[in-house]
Image 1 (cartoon, rainbow, N blue to C red):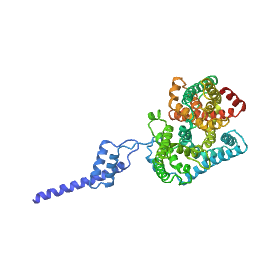
Image 2: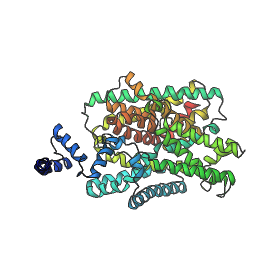
Image 3: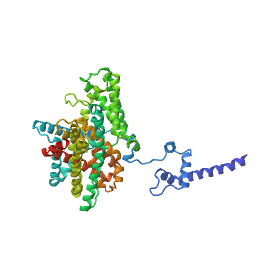
Image 4: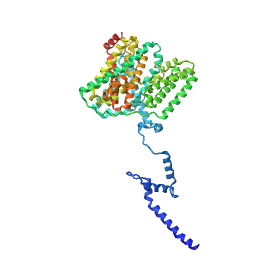
Length: 515
């Protein structure tokens, strides 16, 4: 027994010494495990030793838990801003300074638009006031760019939050006329509706071909090489917090309107919050649909459908019907606005914001001025006169033909154009413009591929000249190299269309063709 005990004592001592020596030798390995080398990963034996060390009694428990949690979560994959799932975005709140910056910059544009509109009305000037404001802003930026470039860049930076806000919510400003489309087309006979649809689809295809072929022809003549455009900053995606916030507004205001239809003074004001929330929610949901679904169910259709569905639901529960609710959606009375009036109140600011996008791409405009201006001018003239001629040939009523003349021009300026003509149906004008954009958004890429319009300049100009903002948004999502030309042609098509329609001789010639 004594011999056995004496035999075990040296053995225990040897084991303890070996353990201490092993721990001492492994200390660098422990540090290496905590901060692995930058160039090469841990080898298999070292990784195995590290894992055994975590299981040792002297190992640290937090490291063990961290390793197990990391394994349960799986590998970490970096996400780009464009592929974020929205969870991180939903937790990021804008700072107070950012909110104030947005309010001041956007409020400045809205105030300028309102003041210009009042001044033009007081002076009995029919020229679009927002277009004049856009020219003024562009001129100021251009002058500053030559005299004080830092001041021009500072002015661009100051208004950047406002331009990003407008870019992010741009489709919403087109929606009101599509929401009240059932009221606008109620007095339009079915036969006339089919004729209008024929003009919309056939006219869009013809305008697309004319603009694209003109750009390619001029490009072959001038032989200007394509250079990279200025990068366009994209607005952030919608967050979960925004979605739930608008959902809360919709539910609470819908219940309030149901309990007391005049709680906010008038039925239009009381319905405004939930109708506006329904429109916004429809746009958010539509923007998040898969791309293959959006080909046939564009976000703006989802947006209008959500607003109409909310109007139907309120009309059913309140037993007042859908017509009064749609009438409250777009009242066209400044003292008693509805949700649609609030959204369409941004249309003037959209036009003014064109000045900033055009200024940012000024080098591109100068370099490709021949292709851009020739295509836009020719396509705009063709669109106006071809609509008048086809309407006369197929026997469409003159008032309806006049109402759809600016079918390829953005809503804000299309409404200004039809105001030059008496008896035009402005609601029908806006609805036709939106429908033209929807047709272009869904089919523009396939048609241009069939027409072999491969040049990005031609594709951008043809898209914007025939399908304005909605077509531009659809094309730029898949062809970013065409986006600058889309943005330029989008603005210039509306500008030139407004300019030529402000000439009395042009208006008289169109009225003569229409009959």
